[in-house]
Amino acid sequence: MDEKTKEPSVTSSSSLEEKGQHDHIETSNAPFVKSPAEKRLVRKLNIRLLPLAGFIVFLQFVDKAALSVAAVLGILEDTHMTMSQYSWLGALFYLGYFIYQLPNNYLLQRFPIGKYMGTLLICWGAVTIGTAFGKNFTQLAVLRVLLGLFEAGTYPALFMIFNRLYRRSEQSACFGFLYLCNGLGSVVGSAAAVGIADLGTRNGIRAWQWGYIIWGTITVVTGIIAVFFLIDSPQSWFLQLTEEEKVIFEERIRDNAVVRKQQVKVSQYWEALKEPRLWLLFVASCAHNLQNGGLVTYSTVLVRGLGFTATESILLQIPSGAVTVLFIAFAVTLHRKTHQNIYTAVICYLLSALGCLLLAVLPNNGIKLLGYYFTWAQTGSYVMLISLIGSTVSGYSKKIFYNGVNMLAYTIGNFAGPLMLVEHTKPAYIPTMWGYFGGNILNILCFLAVRIILSRINKKRLSERSNEPTDVYLNLTDKEDKNYIYSL
Image (cartoon, rainbow, N blue to C red):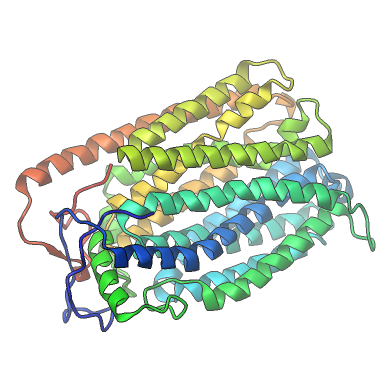
């Protein structure tokens, strides 16, 4: 995540937050070379922040995907659910996600993000444990909504932390790391599920219930740790900045143009709503997450439908997670080599579209695993989408709003995605695979349209750019700041 930056100029370092009109930090488009001191600071930040942030994302995926494992370990039989009700359980998680997005935007700006994130973890861990004792569809449906509600704040909170602490050029690697941990959740979670399956029934508790109890307990403990140790600002005690590092962080704020403001600027919300870019990314995220929601919820069910046993269908999620990690690493590496965010996303969507095409046309046997694994190339594209928001949106309220709208799209797509797998089309679900194929093509068109819009603005700004640098404490949006150049 190291990038070349200019030696920090000496400015006041008494406080990095809410300095208002006293000490100003300005943005500049001058080339920079990273100092050895800043490289040490980035390593320190990586070591103290990324492991905990990554483990939180890992747990979110495992807790959310536990339903897919439970489906082949007896939850359907024990709770007398139909496959249609199972689809609704997959979707209802995202109803909770949807409900919480607007309150989450407000709470993110009003409370310390680390303590807020830790509280959410404790709550969703408790809900995960409670799911083990759900007796019927109604109880499980309520618990799934609550799980989605408490997990809904995870990504927006971590995105804002990374937007604030890392340079724009570093952020794609940071977001890539988060989604790598998502992939590792599939690998480790599936491997652990095999061991949990071997527990069978102990003390009157079935194997699928043990999975919820074990992971839920780990989540609660992690939440308590996050309350005290999750770094959310340069002032976090666990970061322990030296005076030299405080000065360097001021220089980094010049680059990422993210200064935390507790005052909500509604005008920045309205500005975002009027931008075609917001709606293009909203549509792309919706289409993307139709496929994500369907494949995550039905992952083991789809694989078992190819003729594999319950245990084999769980084990075959391990290469699925590994392929996800590889595609994310490919996307992040390609982006850092070429500095082309949108073109990188397009390449990954083409690979994902190929996977959906193979799932739609190949015979329904083990050969379809090739297509199934190719579909996860879309995770690389999603990392680029998050990175695009982080590197092309400024203004604290506006950035939170963009992330919130993206999470709404994430919710809608993931809610509808499992419902597209209609029971009478199983086990191949061919119409659904064609739908996912079309979604990938739509995503490509949306990304290219965003690139055309922002490239035109960049061209105009480069020809008219002012020599006066921008004070980031003015909290200007990317539209208001005529020196702001979009990273595409």
